[in-house]
Amino acid sequence: MSPRELKILYLLLAVSISFCVALTAAYVKQSEGASTAERLRGAGFGFAGSMAVCLPVLMFLLS
Image (cartoon, rainbow, N blue to C red):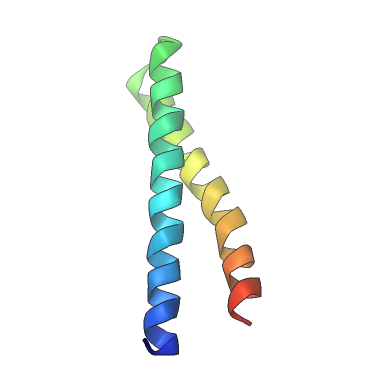
């Protein structure tokens, strides 16, 4: 596997982890009885926060 393919694989892993975090955040908001807009905002913040953690870790691992 080439280094470029490995970087793409790690990036897809980070996106999938962040997507799972976003789904979990939306589910928690739904169980609290939040509106659709609040659920989307919570999912967006969850996704962005998770990517903000995953990307620097991946850059450190790949360097």
